[in-house]
Image 1 (cartoon, rainbow, N blue to C red):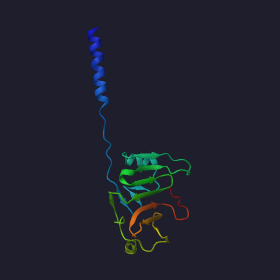
Image 2: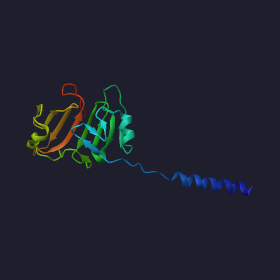
Image 3: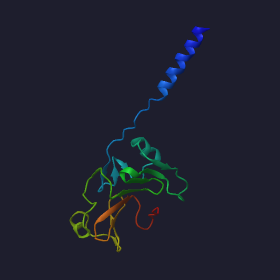
Image 4: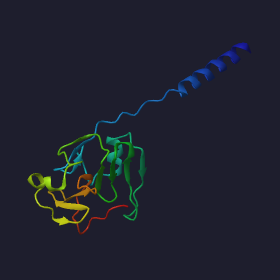
Length: 162
């Protein structure tokens, strides 16, 4: 009887000890290529599953529906968002990964040599036609870029999330 009790106690202790061990999810560094419209070779039209597989350290994910929601994979701590349902990627001012062109913080008038003239202009943003679709740059009150969005859609079919 003591042997059975001791055996059960040892098994329970080993299960409890094993349950406390958790692995840390390691994410590869983010590398944005603005001219190609990719992040680590993931395109703006990549699926929710593809993004979750490539970057398992995501903070939240919203399932895709039929286009009526803003489904995607979100990395709030890294300030990068994959809106997979609406086919665009958003990079915010606190993004710390690599970026092919130093756009974040750049002055509005300094982009002509790299991007040419914007195809659409507004007071707070400029949209550039690219080979993959559209690049939208948002400017703060002093005229510096604080956010960019890349999409494989054009300006007429692009539907952004709030």
